[in-house]
Amino acid sequence: MAVAIEAPFHVLAVDDSLPDRKLIERLLKTSSFQVTTVDSGSKALEFLGLHDHEDSPISTQSDQQEVAVNLIITDYCMPGMTGYDLLKKIKDDSEESSYLRDIPVVIMSSDNIPSRINR
Image (cartoon, rainbow, N blue to C red; front, side, top):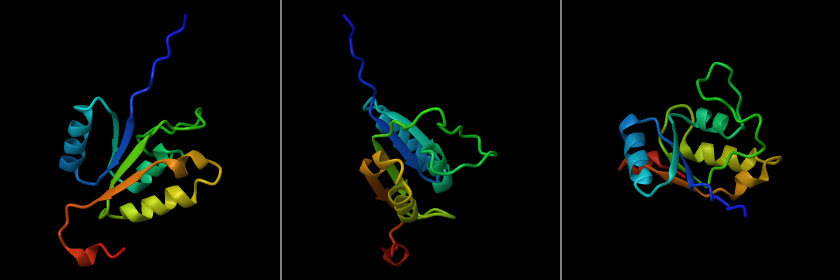
């Protein structure tokens, strides 16, 4: 008799701040979540298989059709690509990977400057 083993809930945390990434990772791991952290939107896209850079230290999941991510948490204010831009890219570019459109995305910010968060 085979026993089905349920995969842990997997969270992708995207934040350019190392202390914030470590805090998110620690909090989520206390709830037994699997956590992958990256420091930019482009690395998140690469991890999800939507962006391909050969010089990046993160390996792409080219052998797998789907990356098993259940939730994405991203910082809003990051250099290069904001969390909102990342959200749009994931939802807009996932035509052939429709499962990405169904992944919930939480955008957060530790900034208390409303004018910086204009969307």
